[in-house]
Image (cartoon, rainbow, N blue to C red):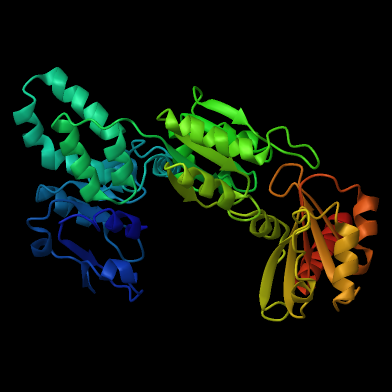
Length: 442
Protein backbone atom coordinates (compact mmCIF):
# COMPACT_ATOMS: atom_id res chain seq x y z
CA UNK A 1 0.00 0.00 0.00
CA UNK A 2 3.00 2.31 -0.20
CA UNK A 3 2.62 3.00 -3.92
CA UNK A 4 -0.38 5.39 -3.66
CA UNK A 5 1.50 7.47 -1.09
CA UNK A 6 4.52 7.81 -3.36
CA UNK A 7 2.38 8.76 -6.36
CA UNK A 8 1.05 11.74 -4.42
CA UNK A 9 4.42 13.40 -4.91
CA UNK A 10 4.96 12.48 -8.56
CA UNK A 11 4.25 15.99 -9.82
CA UNK A 12 5.96 17.76 -6.91
CA UNK A 13 9.59 18.93 -6.66
CA UNK A 14 10.13 16.63 -3.69
CA UNK A 15 13.11 14.23 -3.75
CA UNK A 16 11.84 10.71 -3.11
CA UNK A 17 13.73 7.75 -1.65
CA UNK A 18 12.10 4.33 -1.73
CA UNK A 19 13.56 1.68 0.56
CA UNK A 20 12.34 -1.78 -0.38
CA UNK A 21 13.54 -3.47 2.81
CA UNK A 22 14.44 -7.11 2.46
CA UNK A 23 12.08 -7.88 -0.39
CA UNK A 24 12.98 -8.36 -4.04
CA UNK A 25 9.51 -7.44 -5.27
CA UNK A 26 9.63 -5.28 -8.42
CA UNK A 27 9.05 -1.55 -8.04
CA UNK A 28 6.26 -0.18 -10.28
CA UNK A 29 7.78 1.34 -13.40
CA UNK A 30 6.08 4.73 -13.00
CA UNK A 31 7.50 5.08 -9.46
CA UNK A 32 10.97 4.02 -10.54
CA UNK A 33 11.00 6.99 -12.96
CA UNK A 34 11.02 9.62 -10.25
CA UNK A 35 12.08 7.87 -7.00
CA UNK A 36 15.55 6.71 -6.03
CA UNK A 37 15.27 3.02 -5.23
CA UNK A 38 17.33 1.52 -2.38
CA UNK A 39 17.21 -2.26 -2.03
CA UNK A 40 17.67 -2.25 1.76
CA UNK A 41 16.34 -0.90 5.02
CA UNK A 42 16.92 2.81 5.77
CA UNK A 43 19.50 3.81 8.35
CA UNK A 44 19.40 6.74 10.78
CA UNK A 45 21.75 8.57 8.44
CA UNK A 46 19.35 8.07 5.52
CA UNK A 47 16.54 9.68 7.49
CA UNK A 48 18.40 12.82 8.55
CA UNK A 49 16.98 15.89 6.84
CA UNK A 50 13.83 14.11 5.63
CA UNK A 51 10.60 16.13 5.57
CA UNK A 52 8.12 13.25 5.78
CA UNK A 53 8.47 9.55 6.53
CA UNK A 54 5.98 6.98 5.25
CA UNK A 55 6.22 3.42 6.58
CA UNK A 56 4.33 0.52 5.00
CA UNK A 57 4.37 -2.61 7.14
CA UNK A 58 5.30 -6.01 5.81
CA UNK A 59 7.37 -9.08 6.54
CA UNK A 60 10.55 -8.08 8.33
CA UNK A 61 9.74 -4.34 8.43
CA UNK A 62 10.47 -2.93 11.94
CA UNK A 63 7.64 -0.41 11.83
CA UNK A 64 7.79 0.73 15.46
CA UNK A 65 11.57 1.09 15.48
CA UNK A 66 11.58 3.10 12.25
CA UNK A 67 8.81 5.35 13.55
CA UNK A 68 10.69 6.01 16.79
CA UNK A 69 13.87 6.87 14.87
CA UNK A 70 11.99 9.24 12.58
CA UNK A 71 10.29 11.04 15.44
CA UNK A 72 13.56 11.45 17.35
CA UNK A 73 14.88 13.20 14.25
CA UNK A 74 11.83 15.47 14.18
CA UNK A 75 10.25 13.85 11.12
CA UNK A 76 6.42 13.54 10.97
CA UNK A 77 5.55 9.85 10.47
CA UNK A 78 2.70 8.25 8.55
CA UNK A 79 2.19 4.52 9.10
CA UNK A 80 0.13 3.22 6.22
CA UNK A 81 -3.35 1.96 7.22
CA UNK A 82 -2.75 2.96 10.87
CA UNK A 83 -4.33 6.41 11.33
CA UNK A 84 -4.15 6.34 15.14
CA UNK A 85 -0.41 5.57 15.04
CA UNK A 86 0.37 8.29 12.51
CA UNK A 87 1.32 11.92 13.06
CA UNK A 88 -0.53 13.09 9.93
CA UNK A 89 -2.89 11.83 7.24
CA UNK A 90 -2.53 12.12 3.46
CA UNK A 91 -5.62 13.33 1.63
CA UNK A 92 -6.98 12.19 -1.69
CA UNK A 93 -5.89 14.84 -4.19
CA UNK A 94 -7.31 16.23 -7.41
CA UNK A 95 -4.46 18.00 -9.21
CA UNK A 96 -5.27 20.39 -12.06
CA UNK A 97 -1.89 22.14 -12.15
CA UNK A 98 -2.83 25.58 -10.79
CA UNK A 99 -5.83 24.15 -8.90
CA UNK A 100 -5.36 21.45 -6.26
CA UNK A 101 -8.21 20.00 -4.20
CA UNK A 102 -7.54 17.81 -1.17
CA UNK A 103 -10.16 15.51 0.39
CA UNK A 104 -9.56 13.93 3.78
CA UNK A 105 -11.59 11.97 6.32
CA UNK A 106 -9.00 11.98 9.09
CA UNK A 107 -8.11 8.42 8.20
CA UNK A 108 -11.59 7.21 9.16
CA UNK A 109 -12.89 6.42 5.67
CA UNK A 110 -10.18 6.55 2.97
CA UNK A 111 -12.41 4.71 0.49
CA UNK A 112 -15.02 7.44 0.87
CA UNK A 113 -12.35 10.07 0.22
CA UNK A 114 -11.43 8.27 -2.99
CA UNK A 115 -15.08 8.24 -4.09
CA UNK A 116 -15.42 11.96 -3.35
CA UNK A 117 -12.25 12.60 -5.30
CA UNK A 118 -13.75 10.79 -8.29
CA UNK A 119 -16.82 13.05 -8.10
CA UNK A 120 -14.63 16.16 -7.92
CA UNK A 121 -12.53 14.87 -10.84
CA UNK A 122 -15.70 14.68 -12.88
CA UNK A 123 -16.79 18.19 -11.90
CA UNK A 124 -13.50 19.96 -12.61
CA UNK A 125 -12.51 20.53 -16.26
CA UNK A 126 -9.14 19.04 -17.16
CA UNK A 127 -7.73 22.48 -18.10
CA UNK A 128 -9.16 24.50 -15.21
CA UNK A 129 -5.58 24.93 -13.96
CA UNK A 130 -4.81 26.93 -17.10
CA UNK A 131 -7.24 29.60 -15.92
CA UNK A 132 -5.55 29.71 -12.53
CA UNK A 133 -2.15 30.05 -14.21
CA UNK A 134 -3.40 32.97 -16.33
CA UNK A 135 -4.86 34.67 -13.27
CA UNK A 136 -1.54 34.31 -11.50
CA UNK A 137 0.39 35.69 -14.46
CA UNK A 138 -1.90 38.70 -14.89
CA UNK A 139 -2.58 39.41 -11.24
CA UNK A 140 -0.02 42.22 -10.99
CA UNK A 141 -1.12 43.81 -14.25
CA UNK A 142 -4.77 43.76 -13.21
CA UNK A 143 -3.94 45.30 -9.82
CA UNK A 144 -2.01 48.13 -11.46
CA UNK A 145 -4.81 48.92 -13.94
CA UNK A 146 -7.78 48.46 -11.60
CA UNK A 147 -6.90 50.06 -8.26
CA UNK A 148 -10.29 49.47 -6.62
CA UNK A 149 -11.05 46.07 -5.14
CA UNK A 150 -14.64 45.99 -6.43
CA UNK A 151 -13.44 46.74 -9.96
CA UNK A 152 -10.90 43.92 -9.80
CA UNK A 153 -13.50 41.50 -8.48
CA UNK A 154 -15.91 42.40 -11.28
CA UNK A 155 -13.13 41.95 -13.85
CA UNK A 156 -12.18 38.48 -12.59
CA UNK A 157 -15.81 37.39 -12.56
CA UNK A 158 -16.12 38.36 -16.23
CA UNK A 159 -12.71 37.01 -17.23
CA UNK A 160 -12.97 33.65 -15.47
CA UNK A 161 -16.56 32.95 -16.47
CA UNK A 162 -16.69 34.30 -20.00
CA UNK A 163 -15.06 33.80 -23.37
CA UNK A 164 -11.54 33.61 -21.91
CA UNK A 165 -12.64 30.64 -19.84
CA UNK A 166 -14.03 28.87 -22.90
CA UNK A 167 -10.80 29.44 -24.79
CA UNK A 168 -8.65 28.19 -21.90
CA UNK A 169 -10.73 25.05 -21.42
CA UNK A 170 -10.51 24.30 -25.15
CA UNK A 171 -6.70 24.44 -24.93
CA UNK A 172 -6.15 27.92 -26.41
CA UNK A 173 -4.18 29.55 -23.59
CA UNK A 174 -2.81 32.31 -25.83
CA UNK A 175 -6.32 33.17 -27.01
CA UNK A 176 -7.59 33.19 -23.44
CA UNK A 177 -4.79 35.56 -22.44
CA UNK A 178 -5.63 37.92 -25.31
CA UNK A 179 -9.29 37.88 -24.33
CA UNK A 180 -8.45 38.70 -20.70
CA UNK A 181 -6.27 41.63 -21.75
CA UNK A 182 -8.97 42.86 -24.11
CA UNK A 183 -11.44 42.73 -21.23
CA UNK A 184 -8.97 44.55 -18.99
CA UNK A 185 -8.58 47.31 -21.58
CA UNK A 186 -12.33 47.80 -21.67
CA UNK A 187 -12.71 46.30 -25.14
CA UNK A 188 -15.67 44.16 -24.25
CA UNK A 189 -16.87 42.15 -27.17
CA UNK A 190 -20.56 41.52 -27.56
CA UNK A 191 -21.45 38.27 -25.87
CA UNK A 192 -21.58 35.66 -28.58
CA UNK A 193 -23.46 32.43 -28.27
CA UNK A 194 -22.17 28.97 -29.02
CA UNK A 195 -23.82 25.67 -29.88
CA UNK A 196 -22.45 22.40 -28.50
CA UNK A 197 -23.63 19.21 -30.20
CA UNK A 198 -23.33 16.75 -27.32
CA UNK A 199 -23.73 13.00 -27.27
CA UNK A 200 -25.78 11.92 -24.25
CA UNK A 201 -24.79 8.28 -24.58
CA UNK A 202 -27.23 5.37 -24.40
CA UNK A 203 -29.07 6.49 -21.28
CA UNK A 204 -27.02 5.42 -18.28
CA UNK A 205 -25.72 8.69 -16.72
CA UNK A 206 -22.51 6.90 -15.69
CA UNK A 207 -21.67 6.50 -19.39
CA UNK A 208 -21.78 10.23 -20.04
CA UNK A 209 -18.37 11.73 -20.84
CA UNK A 210 -16.83 14.16 -18.36
CA UNK A 211 -16.94 16.95 -20.93
CA UNK A 212 -20.60 16.32 -21.70
CA UNK A 213 -21.45 16.50 -17.99
CA UNK A 214 -19.60 19.81 -17.66
CA UNK A 215 -21.33 21.32 -20.68
CA UNK A 216 -24.70 20.32 -19.24
CA UNK A 217 -23.89 22.09 -15.99
CA UNK A 218 -22.93 25.25 -17.89
CA UNK A 219 -25.68 25.34 -20.52
CA UNK A 220 -28.17 28.21 -20.67
CA UNK A 221 -30.38 26.34 -23.13
CA UNK A 222 -30.70 22.56 -23.64
CA UNK A 223 -32.37 21.31 -26.82
CA UNK A 224 -32.87 17.59 -26.26
CA UNK A 225 -34.19 14.45 -27.91
CA UNK A 226 -36.73 11.94 -26.65
CA UNK A 227 -34.05 9.31 -26.05
CA UNK A 228 -32.11 11.42 -23.55
CA UNK A 229 -32.73 9.81 -20.16
CA UNK A 230 -34.02 11.56 -17.04
CA UNK A 231 -30.81 10.59 -15.27
CA UNK A 232 -28.75 12.53 -17.80
CA UNK A 233 -31.10 15.52 -17.73
CA UNK A 234 -30.82 15.59 -13.93
CA UNK A 235 -27.19 16.69 -14.34
CA UNK A 236 -28.20 19.91 -16.09
CA UNK A 237 -28.55 23.32 -14.48
CA UNK A 238 -31.98 23.65 -12.90
CA UNK A 239 -32.47 27.12 -14.33
CA UNK A 240 -31.52 26.17 -17.89
CA UNK A 241 -34.21 26.55 -20.54
CA UNK A 242 -35.14 23.07 -21.77
CA UNK A 243 -36.63 22.57 -25.21
CA UNK A 244 -37.93 19.09 -26.10
CA UNK A 245 -37.64 18.37 -29.81
CA UNK A 246 -38.07 14.61 -29.51
CA UNK A 247 -39.37 12.52 -32.36
CA UNK A 248 -41.09 9.15 -32.56
CA UNK A 249 -41.75 6.99 -35.60
CA UNK A 250 -44.11 8.87 -37.88
CA UNK A 251 -44.49 11.75 -35.41
CA UNK A 252 -42.18 14.75 -35.69
CA UNK A 253 -43.77 17.58 -33.67
CA UNK A 254 -40.68 19.72 -34.24
CA UNK A 255 -39.45 19.33 -37.85
CA UNK A 256 -35.72 19.12 -38.47
CA UNK A 257 -35.62 22.56 -40.12
CA UNK A 258 -37.21 24.09 -37.05
CA UNK A 259 -34.65 22.45 -34.76
CA UNK A 260 -31.91 24.22 -36.67
CA UNK A 261 -33.80 27.51 -36.36
CA UNK A 262 -34.08 27.04 -32.60
CA UNK A 263 -30.35 26.47 -32.23
CA UNK A 264 -29.51 29.57 -34.27
CA UNK A 265 -32.12 31.73 -32.52
CA UNK A 266 -30.96 30.87 -29.00
CA UNK A 267 -27.27 31.20 -29.83
CA UNK A 268 -27.85 34.65 -31.32
CA UNK A 269 -29.13 35.73 -27.92
CA UNK A 270 -25.63 35.08 -26.59
CA UNK A 271 -26.65 31.79 -24.94
CA UNK A 272 -24.60 28.65 -24.38
CA UNK A 273 -26.75 26.13 -26.23
CA UNK A 274 -26.35 22.39 -25.77
CA UNK A 275 -28.00 20.25 -28.43
CA UNK A 276 -28.25 17.01 -26.49
CA UNK A 277 -28.65 13.90 -28.63
CA UNK A 278 -28.98 10.27 -27.59
CA UNK A 279 -25.89 8.19 -28.28
CA UNK A 280 -23.42 10.04 -30.50
CA UNK A 281 -24.40 13.12 -32.56
CA UNK A 282 -22.72 11.81 -35.69
CA UNK A 283 -24.08 8.24 -35.60
CA UNK A 284 -27.59 8.39 -37.08
CA UNK A 285 -28.26 11.52 -35.03
CA UNK A 286 -28.40 14.05 -37.91
CA UNK A 287 -25.72 15.98 -36.10
CA UNK A 288 -23.94 16.72 -39.36
CA UNK A 289 -27.00 18.50 -40.73
CA UNK A 290 -27.41 20.60 -37.59
CA UNK A 291 -23.71 21.47 -37.56
CA UNK A 292 -23.98 22.74 -41.15
CA UNK A 293 -26.99 24.92 -40.28
CA UNK A 294 -25.33 26.48 -37.22
CA UNK A 295 -22.03 27.21 -38.94
CA UNK A 296 -23.76 28.58 -42.02
CA UNK A 297 -25.39 31.12 -39.68
CA UNK A 298 -21.94 32.24 -38.54
CA UNK A 299 -22.28 30.76 -35.07
CA UNK A 300 -19.50 28.89 -33.29
CA UNK A 301 -20.18 25.20 -32.84
CA UNK A 302 -18.37 22.32 -31.18
CA UNK A 303 -19.07 18.59 -31.13
CA UNK A 304 -18.68 16.39 -28.06
CA UNK A 305 -18.97 12.68 -28.92
CA UNK A 306 -20.98 10.20 -26.93
CA UNK A 307 -21.03 6.43 -26.55
CA UNK A 308 -23.18 5.21 -29.40
CA UNK A 309 -25.96 2.67 -28.81
CA UNK A 310 -24.27 -0.13 -30.76
CA UNK A 311 -21.21 -0.09 -28.51
CA UNK A 312 -23.11 0.42 -25.26
CA UNK A 313 -25.81 -2.19 -25.91
CA UNK A 314 -23.33 -4.75 -27.20
CA UNK A 315 -21.14 -4.29 -24.15
CA UNK A 316 -24.09 -4.51 -21.78
CA UNK A 317 -25.30 -7.73 -23.40
CA UNK A 318 -21.82 -9.24 -23.73
CA UNK A 319 -21.85 -9.25 -27.53
CA UNK A 320 -18.35 -8.67 -28.96
CA UNK A 321 -18.78 -6.61 -32.11
CA UNK A 322 -15.44 -7.92 -33.36
CA UNK A 323 -13.91 -11.27 -32.50
CA UNK A 324 -10.75 -12.94 -33.74
CA UNK A 325 -12.65 -16.12 -34.57
CA UNK A 326 -15.93 -14.69 -35.85
CA UNK A 327 -15.82 -11.06 -36.95
CA UNK A 328 -12.97 -9.08 -38.44
CA UNK A 329 -15.15 -6.05 -39.17
CA UNK A 330 -18.29 -4.32 -37.92
CA UNK A 331 -20.72 -2.09 -39.82
CA UNK A 332 -23.41 0.21 -38.44
CA UNK A 333 -26.53 0.65 -40.57
CA UNK A 334 -29.93 2.29 -40.25
CA UNK A 335 -33.08 0.28 -40.71
CA UNK A 336 -34.80 3.48 -41.85
CA UNK A 337 -33.55 5.31 -44.92
CA UNK A 338 -34.41 8.72 -46.37
CA UNK A 339 -37.46 8.68 -48.62
CA UNK A 340 -36.29 8.22 -52.20
CA UNK A 341 -32.72 7.99 -50.86
CA UNK A 342 -30.23 5.14 -51.38
CA UNK A 343 -30.71 1.91 -49.47
CA UNK A 344 -28.01 0.36 -47.29
CA UNK A 345 -25.48 -1.86 -49.07
CA UNK A 346 -26.80 -5.26 -48.01
CA UNK A 347 -24.10 -7.09 -49.90
CA UNK A 348 -21.49 -5.46 -47.67
CA UNK A 349 -23.65 -5.93 -44.56
CA UNK A 350 -23.94 -9.64 -45.35
CA UNK A 351 -20.22 -10.28 -45.76
CA UNK A 352 -18.89 -13.35 -43.91
CA UNK A 353 -16.76 -12.93 -40.78
CA UNK A 354 -18.40 -9.60 -40.02
CA UNK A 355 -20.95 -8.08 -37.66
CA UNK A 356 -23.82 -5.87 -38.81
CA UNK A 357 -25.58 -3.59 -36.31
CA UNK A 358 -28.92 -2.03 -37.23
CA UNK A 359 -30.30 1.08 -35.57
CA UNK A 360 -34.05 1.81 -35.84
CA UNK A 361 -34.54 -1.67 -37.20
CA UNK A 362 -37.59 -3.00 -35.32
CA UNK A 363 -40.14 -1.85 -37.90
CA UNK A 364 -37.82 -2.89 -40.72
CA UNK A 365 -37.08 -6.36 -39.32
CA UNK A 366 -38.85 -8.25 -42.15
CA UNK A 367 -36.92 -6.22 -44.77
CA UNK A 368 -33.59 -6.71 -42.95
CA UNK A 369 -34.18 -10.45 -42.76
CA UNK A 370 -35.19 -10.74 -46.42
CA UNK A 371 -32.45 -8.50 -47.85
CA UNK A 372 -29.60 -10.01 -45.84
CA UNK A 373 -30.55 -13.56 -46.77
CA UNK A 374 -30.96 -12.52 -50.41
CA UNK A 375 -27.45 -10.99 -50.25
CA UNK A 376 -26.01 -14.30 -49.09
CA UNK A 377 -26.12 -14.29 -45.29
CA UNK A 378 -27.20 -17.68 -43.97
CA UNK A 379 -30.63 -17.88 -42.30
CA UNK A 380 -28.93 -19.65 -39.37
CA UNK A 381 -26.76 -16.60 -38.61
CA UNK A 382 -27.24 -15.64 -34.94
CA UNK A 383 -28.96 -12.35 -34.06
CA UNK A 384 -29.20 -10.43 -30.81
CA UNK A 385 -31.75 -7.74 -30.04
CA UNK A 386 -31.08 -5.37 -27.14
CA UNK A 387 -34.09 -3.27 -26.20
CA UNK A 388 -33.68 -0.20 -23.95
CA UNK A 389 -29.98 -0.94 -23.62
CA UNK A 390 -28.23 0.22 -20.39
CA UNK A 391 -31.58 1.22 -18.84
CA UNK A 392 -33.22 -0.59 -15.92
CA UNK A 393 -35.72 -1.98 -18.44
CA UNK A 394 -33.06 -3.47 -20.73
CA UNK A 395 -34.13 -6.70 -22.42
CA UNK A 396 -32.05 -9.10 -24.50
CA UNK A 397 -33.50 -11.52 -27.03
CA UNK A 398 -31.54 -13.98 -29.14
CA UNK A 399 -32.44 -15.91 -32.27
CA UNK A 400 -31.44 -16.39 -35.90
CA UNK A 401 -31.60 -14.19 -38.97
CA UNK A 402 -34.15 -16.47 -40.63
CA UNK A 403 -36.56 -15.91 -37.73
CA UNK A 404 -35.82 -12.22 -37.07
CA UNK A 405 -39.22 -10.81 -38.05
CA UNK A 406 -41.08 -13.52 -36.16
CA UNK A 407 -38.84 -12.97 -33.13
CA UNK A 408 -39.66 -9.25 -33.02
CA UNK A 409 -43.38 -9.95 -33.24
CA UNK A 410 -43.38 -12.86 -30.77
CA UNK A 411 -41.39 -10.98 -28.13
CA UNK A 412 -43.29 -7.73 -28.57
CA UNK A 413 -40.15 -5.68 -29.17
CA UNK A 414 -41.24 -2.05 -29.25
CA UNK A 415 -38.72 0.16 -27.43
CA UNK A 416 -35.48 1.58 -28.82
CA UNK A 417 -33.57 -1.49 -30.00
CA UNK A 418 -30.35 -2.37 -31.75
CA UNK A 419 -30.24 -5.53 -33.85
CA UNK A 420 -26.89 -7.30 -34.06
CA UNK A 421 -26.37 -9.87 -36.79
CA UNK A 422 -23.33 -12.14 -36.84
CA UNK A 423 -21.62 -15.10 -35.23
CA UNK A 424 -20.50 -12.92 -32.32
CA UNK A 425 -24.13 -12.65 -31.27
CA UNK A 426 -24.13 -16.42 -30.93
CA UNK A 427 -21.37 -16.34 -28.31
CA UNK A 428 -23.47 -14.03 -26.15
CA UNK A 429 -26.55 -16.20 -26.64
CA UNK A 430 -24.60 -19.24 -25.45
CA UNK A 431 -23.37 -17.35 -22.39
CA UNK A 432 -26.89 -16.18 -21.58
CA UNK A 433 -28.23 -19.72 -21.86
CA UNK A 434 -25.49 -21.07 -19.60
CA UNK A 435 -26.18 -18.37 -17.01
CA UNK A 436 -29.92 -19.10 -17.08
CA UNK A 437 -29.20 -22.79 -16.62
CA UNK A 438 -27.04 -22.05 -13.56
CA UNK A 439 -29.71 -19.81 -12.06
CA UNK A 440 -32.40 -22.44 -12.62
CA UNK A 441 -30.18 -25.09 -11.06
CA UNK A 442 -29.52 -22.89 -8.03
